Amino acid sequence: MSLKGKTLFITGASRGIGLAIALRAARDGANIAVAAKTVEPHPKLAGTIPSAAAEIERAGGRALPLAVDVRDEASVAAAVRECASVFGGIDICVNNASAINLASTEQIDMRRYDLIQQISTRGTFVTTRACVPLLKRAANPHVLTLSPPLDLNPRWFAPHLAYSLSKYGMSLCMLGMAEEYRAAGIACNALWPRTTIATAAVEFALGGPAMMRRSRKPEIVADAAHVILSRPARECSGRFFIDDSVLYEAGIRDFSAYSVEPGGTLLADLFIARDSAAPPGVRLEFMQ
Image 1 (tube, rainbow, N blue to C red):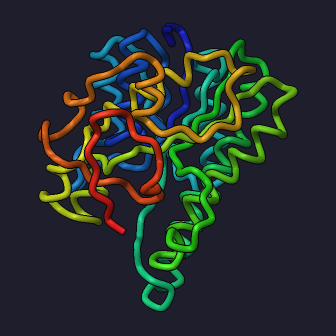
Image 2: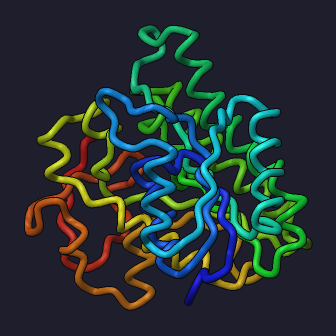
């Protein structure tokens, strides 16, 4: 299973899960378009487009740094054209860019509501749509979106309706596009972590250092993404994957290396049901 020579267009690839997916592909010798927004260093958030590109090159890949606002259709289209021009096409589209706000219906202001819908759901639609003509020409084309399984239990909506709508919108894009592009052979799938992941969102928007310690590293999502993206596209579409289940199916039995602090009880991520089948030995505490 190798992505050597494949070209990946990854949104939000300057840090976190997006960067981890890029680095895993880079170790195979892949080409990575770093489609992100952070050009200058942020006072709190590590990682910029140039720093991510440098890491990718050091890992063995070829990097194309692209300043992209996924809310802007013209910005996305220009970036996709440049990626195709430099690398000769696009084999894989990864929709990682997202925004989080867990405010309730009465607490969230409409400016913030619009922002998370535009980045997450609309950004996924716009980016995938721009990549499709190039994916149709690829040998094993994949679209992978970092979004949750579709579970219409009201408990996932009542506490943070705006955020849930934005993430489920991403998943619905994959549900519909998997069928729409089945004949074209383009795989469209979603991937979600079973546990919270040690990213800036967890550190600054959710639970701080305490939650970070009970999270897994972004590499578990990256390794699961690598497994999915290596599969034959025509045999793997319309699926909603959970990271450790993908790896367990691929033969991984020891997940301790992925934990920030191995041996402890991990926090289940949002949208993970209590009755979901975790691999043996995984201890979870549920936030809701």
